[in-house]
Image (tube, rainbow, N blue to C red; front, side, top):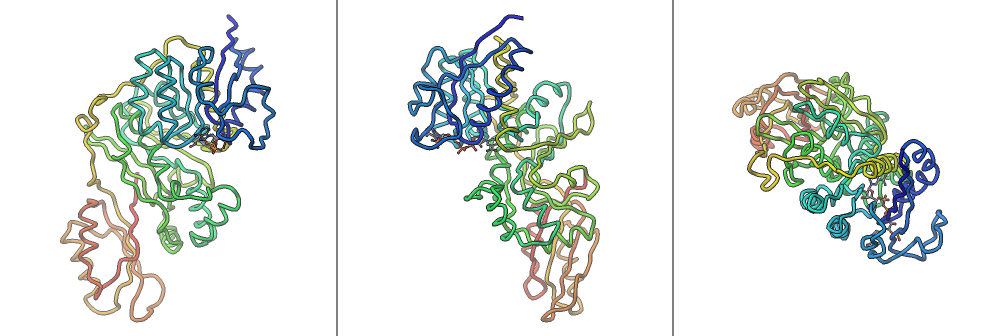
Length: 428
Ligand SMILES: NC(=O)c1ccc[n+]([C@@H]2O[C@H](COP(=O)([O-])OP(=O)(O)OC[C@H]3O[C@@H](n4cnc5c(N)ncnc54)[C@H](OP(=O)(O)O)[C@@H]3O)[C@@H](O)[C@H]2O)c1
């Protein structure tokens, strides 16, 4: 085995960057023994050089000048852990244009600029690696790109955001209110001080755009993903769902049928027996279906310094082991709208909770309104006692069109019932 010394540079060194430093420090010798590769971190870019840090960087390594990383001719691989859209996108592009391979953990910049970055990489022959951008330590990118390439993947269901999975798990287990669990998650460091990207589903949508593009061999831009977060989830619905045999998850769903692709992130009821129903707390999982492999599930830690570093260092070793980088191909590389059509009118069963007036004719009017829009009722339950003349009704419908369901809901007048919540159901 030929020994090869590789000089690398970090863009950023917060949680993830520090994990990568520690993993290379503690495990670099083993990697070197196995692969003949040794890595020297030549420069580490940070914003604030005066900030106290747990790592005792050797003299001259830390810098606040990005040129020290992306313009240094000795650095052949740039590891990006800055986060956010800019300047991460510009700096990765700059590095690729100079022929440097980029390894990134940044789902936002990657989902938005993947194709521009890949074009630049191809032009200079540089590599572009992004395992850590989706589901931390879970090797889902490598699996889709290589190990499952003999499959036509038709469905993906992912729990790809640990913060929201933790919140929904807690709400399900002890019936706590959303706001209380979010506050606790923030105290425990499991949710960001500004949790918007997680709880509004955007973080999951960036990841789904990447997963669907790779699995379906066609660009599925971030804007194609329907997004609804968990901020309006009520524990009463979780409880009613449990009584009907369902568990609530924030699911990232991608389906391809011919050229029609639907990609959506929203709270979803799945059957209690589904393997994803048992993914609790901050864990991530991806369940998929390929025509040759059948059903398959990946599960593991989707965040945290060391799990994320595990994916990055593995990418680093892979990148340094080859002189011939591979790039995924897309049927619609130039124009995303041409090959894959966005499907916004998907079909699924729905859970609907209403407060309905307890008087003759109300039930039949609700059923008629549903029927007028092609929605048929699979099950109905009355919950609890009458309050102020109204009772809680919970419906599960048969599979219905999203558009028809929304129209039906609008047509149910307040003199009959108010719709308190509507949650999509996956029966797979
Ligand atoms: N945290 C996780 O568990 C996790 C998991 C998977 C993927 N990721 C992704 O990994 C990336 C990094 O996450 P993180 O948690 O490590 O973030 P972080 O702790 O906030 O670290 C960001 C680092 O980037 C530096 N930085 C940011 N903007 C800069 C600028 N304009 N110029 C120079 N340096 C700049 C910061 O410098 P200072 O140190 O001086 O502030 C810091 O070192 C994100 O894309 C995130 O989505 C994170």
